[in-house]
Length: 246
Image (tube, rainbow, N blue to C red; front, side):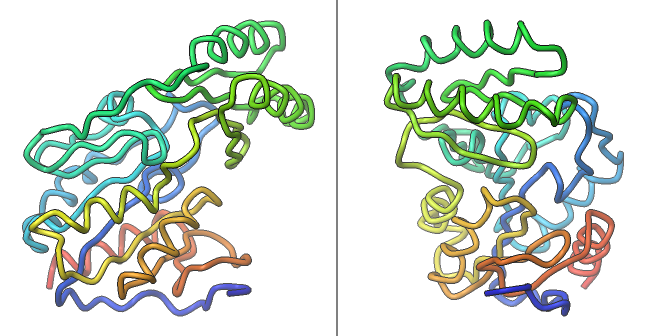
């Protein structure tokens, strides 16, 4: 769908299952992954939403679960990290995954490459490795060329996001995480709505639509599979508060 409609998503909660991205959706993007500012009201809001929706709330982030929990209390919530490569259910149990072959080599090469260029930041995750270039945007082409070569050498796939390139095993994505969670008892039969801002959220927009729901694009209009749009993080917060207060 070209240029997602300006109309915000509906507020009705009947059989709603909410899947929320983190960076760029619940918190504003920042110069580095660790310099984000998280509102003290966010965790209480998510707790109220989870109660309102009968547990049908999940955080689906590109960050690892361990990193996400340094910034946000996820107790009692289903959480997916590393773009679908990590999945923890609401009861705290993990869906086990094995670290992909080639990742150790990719991690070592990425550390050495980024260490030689000021402004590049490596994000080391359990099942993937990412290089952020927000502080060195002029290096975008160089980063993409390096990661493309490294992907070919390791058998990993390259995934592009906002000022970041990531190497990860093929197969899982945020859409797969949504589909897996929708088989859990509290989510089964509900209407999934995924809220996200990045190109990496498109898989989840498609998955939500396939299961009778839809996606909410956060940010300016662009070509997207989302059905609705919210202008930014503050609009997402206001929308979630309306749902929680119903």
